[in-house]
Length: 365
Image (cartoon, rainbow, N blue to C red; front, top):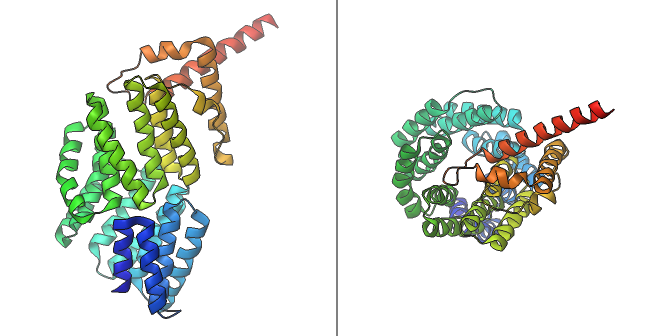
C-alpha cells in the first residue's frame, strides 16, 4: 500500500511527491526485500526523468537484481521496462529492444497480457526508430485491444495519444485529433502526467497548423507546466521548441529566441536523444518562420556520436546566414504545415552550394 501511494504521488505531483512518498516508505520499510526493491525502482524512474541515466540505471539494476532473486516476475518486468526506456532515451535502441522483449516474456508468463502487449509495442517502436521495423499501426491496435479488455483506462488513453502522434506524422490528422479528444478526459480524470503532457503538446502543434495561436499558447503553456510538475525536462523542452514556432508566427523574435535557447539548453540537460531529435526538428521548422539561427550556430555537440551532425548543422546555418539563402528558403516554406521539411531543405541547399564551391576551387586549381 505504501509503494502504491508513492507511485501515485509521483504520477500526480512529480518529483516532490515521489520524494515525500519514498521518505515515508523508507521510514516504515525493511532495508531489504520487496519494499527496498520498489524504492530503488521509483528512484530510478525519477532519475530517468531528470536525465541522470547512469544514476537511473544504477537504481534500476539494483531493483531488478533483488526482484529476480525474490522471484518477483511482475515487479522485475516493470524495472526492465524502465531500463529499456533509459536505453531508448540514450539512443541504445538494440539494448532497449532486448529489455522490452524480456519484459514481455515475463509478463506473459505471469498472465499479464496487457503489460506484455505494452512491452511488445515499445519494442516495436524502438525497432521502428532503428529502421528495422515497418508500420506500427498493428502493434498499437493489438496493445489497445489488450488494455481495453483489462480495463486500464488511463493507460489505454496514454497509448492512444502515442498512436495519435504516429498518425499525425503520417498525415492522418483527423484520426489523430479524434484519438486525442477521446483520451484527454480520461487522462485529466486520472491526473496522469505521462499522458497529459504529450496530449497538450500535440494539441498545441495542431493549433499552430490551424493558425489558432491563442489556443496553441494555452496548450503549450499547459504542457510546459505539467512537464515541470512531472520533473520531465525533455518533455518540457519539446513544448518550448513549439512555443518558439508560435512566437515566430506572432512576430515576437526576441521571445522566439529565448524559447529556442531554453529548449536547446533543457534538451541538452535531459540527455534524451529521442526528445532532442524532436526539439531540433521543431526549431529547424521555426527557422523558416523567422527564428534567428544564433542558437544553432552556438550549439555544441551533446555526445561524440552527434559531433558530425552538429558540425553539419552549424555549417549549413552559417552559410545560409552569410549568403541570405535562409530568407529564400523561408519564403518557400509552408507556414501552416512545415513539419519535417525545413532542416532537410537547409542541409540539401548547403550541400549543393558546397559541391559547387568545390567544383569552382578545382577549376581554378
